[in-house]
Image (cartoon, rainbow, N blue to C red; front, top):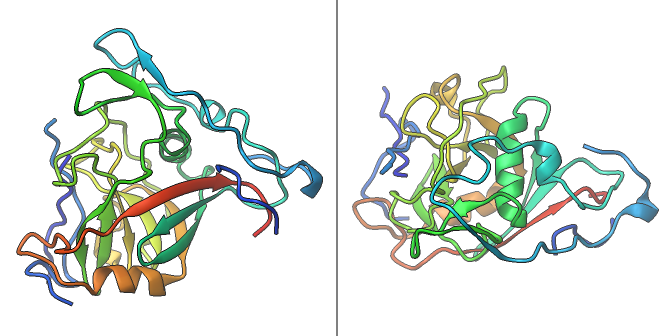
Length: 247
């Protein structure tokens, strides 16, 4: 999936400059090649799911993957559902919004935890393993956003399936977490985090979280890039941890 933006004028964690591109008037899109409560005592490290290679050429989930499946075996905790992104520029914590975007949150959490099957771009097989760990932010634009979640790192990678938009009243603020797309109902695995408010994106992209500190996003977007806004020095997403432990 190529994500394209239109241009316009306390406990252990759960889951174990430059640029030749757009300015703050850009928009976000992709072209496809294509919660629980519980007390503090219950909160603890997540258990990694075993890696699996699944038979068949079609999505084993038939395009349907629920939040309950995504959260299976995740320890309960007193905090909100969060994704902690460990990047080369620092750690970003994103509170997820399962009430406003249950399918989007289920997809992100399921891929991050190795619960949602995806099609391996190298083998063509459907697999279950932690999807986001080790991927890169392949597109960064200062005063706009950082985009990642592409297994190819080219803007054309996707998980082998798409799912529908969940447009809500949420607005693009600094630190908003949303899915990039190639048009209506073409969400996959690529996501972006805004550096500043980007209200021209409201209504066209599925927002499913809010992240902080924005200073880390700023550090990611203000690096030297090529003409396609790709960092000249690889900017890696080392690990995504899903947790309900208290912040």
